[in-house]
Amino acid sequence: MQRTYEEINTKIRSGKAVIVTAEEIIPIVEEKGIKRAAEEIDVVTTGTFGPMCSSGAILNFGHSDPPIRMQKVWLNNVEAYAGLAAVDVYLGATQPSESQEMEYGGAHVIEDLISGKKIKLKAISQGTDCYPRREIESYITKESINQAVLFNPRNGYQNYNVAVNTSDRKIYTYMGILLPHIGNANYSTSSQLSPLLNDPQFRTIGIGTRIFLGGAQGYIAWEGTQFSPQILKDEEGKVIYKGGTLAVIGNLKEMSTDYIRAATFKGYGVTLVVGIGIPIPILNDEIMRNAAVKDEDIWTEIIDYSFPHLIKPSLGRVNYKQLREGNITIRGKNVPTSPLSSYAKAREIAQRLKEEILRGKFLLQEPIRKFTEESKLKPLLEKR
Image (cartoon, rainbow, N blue to C red; front, side):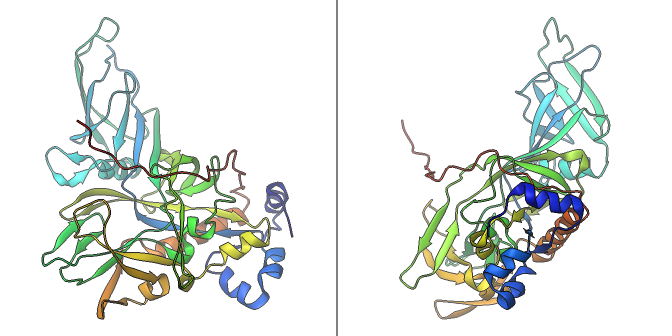
């Protein structure tokens, strides 16, 4: 069986496309088999909703009179990067407030903008002949500014580690609080709903793919930073897909705080929780086989985060069926598990994307370029 994007989009426009979520496809394939399911299903929708630190927004405020070339900018006392142009900034999600520190940051400003709140703007400049103004204070909203573009350099990790702590003290990480002596295990992937685990070889996901982003339609702009897909196998035949990431872009003004939320990890800092959904077009049997993956067939590594180096020890492997049951065994110890991502919200996103496609409001976009197959992750080496 082979079909094209245009054939699927024609069925979407005519209301004849058959769309299911990545959860719903599993019993269909179990009942009918890969070949028949691929013949009957046109699109499988995926979803994820979790903390994605490498996120931020490009904002254009418009020019004041007299004009100013902003060189330092604060939004609700959170500094944004102003080295773009006179009144353009990039606001990073993890930038902390200069007055509230970890309690408020760039992610909170982004959420407040989306919700329609007023944001205090302060900017200073050395002044020039064409931009004579040296400082300005005002208030902005998403309606008052020209552009508000969510541009996230690294989102949607294909698969992530399970984090544990073998030390004798509590540690604070981007994977949450880890209790001593392997007192808990945290993970952050939506498993069988996760977009990049339903297309692990990136056969349908690439530059230009139209996606659900934060409640609006967005696009994959490029491979994500640190993009380094790997396929790890052990002697028992367990396969771990990991290392794929996405750079995504969309109109912040169209987004919803139902799917974009600020969060603070105690002892670590601010992050942005992002909702992403990606449709997987069923072009052939192999794509269907990948899209029907189940929790028990998706493996990840248990990593000791108490080790203060780039390469951390692995304590074994576990699948997502075991993780989602709430307990796993590590070194003979029964350890409770906790997700940092929301499976319920991932399910909601996959369902909403399915409904938008069924209503003809969301067409599939074939990637204009596939991601490179060879990409090696390089460390930063100290050189003096």
